[in-house]
Image 1 (cartoon, helix red, strand yellow):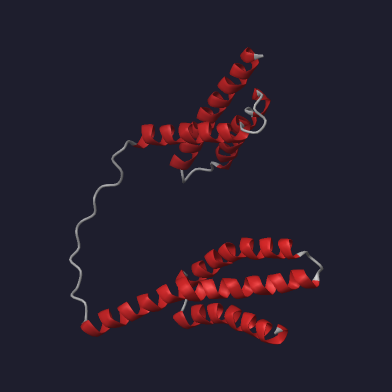
Image 2 (cartoon, helix red, strand yellow):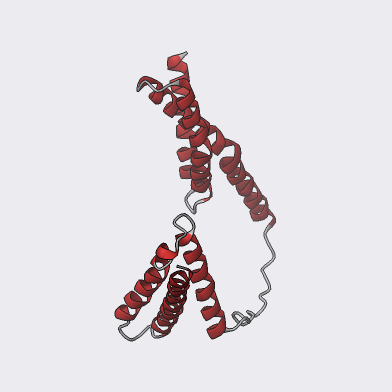
Length: 192
């Protein structure tokens, strides 16, 4: 049994190295048609991950396979490109900031911070309260409703904070974050 697991692991390592090298070659030749090589490389990586399934580790087999494949792919990338990275860019002297623009930029940064922090949290709590009320209308128990609320707050907070730092106009971002707060406030006012 141990020999079978070792064979599957070696097959996985071989397929992972093959897939990483094929993908590296395909991406190096951008001008030529290389879709077949890309598909072959990804299929080899998929086969390398799936080869960990019969190893006898049903819970950890795929995770270990993915970790091994990632390590092998990183080794191939660093082996082919080296550790040096891109050449350093020429240092550019920035123009002297205008005092009015620097002050406005500071205000804008403060506004974005307030949008992504407390206002996004308030919006997440308000949307989670809406979910809490909808779950109550659906007949969920208090414990399940509370679990839904506690699960939804961090997820919605991260989504709203992401909305706050997107490269959109500040007014549009603020509207997208104030709207959930208003909806939650209306719901609280209606239910109380």
